[in-house]
Length: 331
Length: 202
Image (cartoon, rainbow over all chains, first blue to last red; front, top):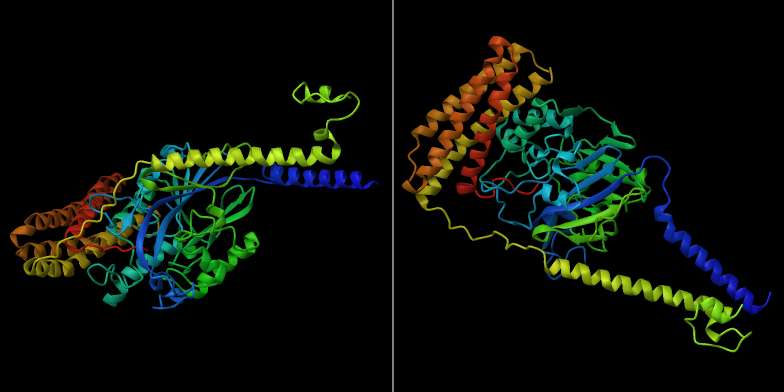
């Protein structure tokens, strides 16, 4: 074989490898495969680093990236999953109103408007899985009248248990004006629970007790006490492998990567670590764990969300995975 | 095959029988790769430009973060006094919600349901009397009326729910629901006025 031929063969082989790698994304995966987007409903501004991740509390003068940030800017992420006859939301964010402004939040965008940018109408949503029942994750249920809600039995029981606890400090919805000091019933305003009840009244709620497959390959996994009493994860098969959504059990993707707890509310930190481990087991690592409040979201530093664009009120939308035949929504 | 055949006339003419230097195997493949890379680069630049344009044109709104004036001492005293009542009202509201939930999910029978709703109703009656006993500063008269209205809506909701135990019809729960919903919104309105940040990011 001449040097020239060897070179030609090498180049040809390189081209074949290149073509195969480029084509890999369009090869249908075995089994069901869903399209997935992540949208940012709002940003909670200037949350003290140590309040979000105790191990990353700000240390004045520190040059360590672990401790040199005073605040985090926390997105409120909502998962949008489409496949077969289903459009599934994982969490629903919250709704800014004249009576609920959350003055330290910015870039709030109505979830139906964000879905519209994906070509999805509110009435198209068939299922909603709430990772837990806090107001900033279960706050727009009424906007999706056709959707069936999936909530863990343990979540409802946990709230009720807390509210009926004999000691007033533990039973308190808020312990002080403008705070709740992480009590067990903290984060559940009457309006949010009313919305959950509204779904039950309308016959559009499934109270899940543990694991449940809600669509082919789409599986709810309990993560009780990993953030709240009845936290739940959602496994979703896609062309880039399985994803696991974790709501606030997965508040920080860096936390999952580096094994650090995050957003401890009604959290048993051991259970949060076990929820992290669940993602490693299901997906084979940490890359495909979908976090609710990861500050690095919508950047190359959180690779799952790097394919993003800007929506209404400077919101963000990221195309995470496309099912075979699904067209990109990115402008 | 002449270069003219290959190029369909787009390549500069060459001596017949001798491939043009760009079409020699040694240079053809790298050339194609370079061209492909250039095409990808151009496409990327065009796309970036489009995204940048879209971003620039996004309908951004200024963030609503006006500084709130501190409450005056009399307002603060009222807010403190109402806060204590508010804790009981929130619990009564949750009790109504969970009574309905358990009943609909068949986790509670009629007597259980009735006992719990009655309990919540008693708490609300007590709360109403306590709110009426407060003397708000003039600046908070509207807030005071709003709060009283919310408690009364919850009371009406509880009364409607109890009618289920009379005729067993779930329609009463559906009729009660919007009353509680409206009352819950009113609680948040009052909270926004005198307990800013009542609910923090969770």
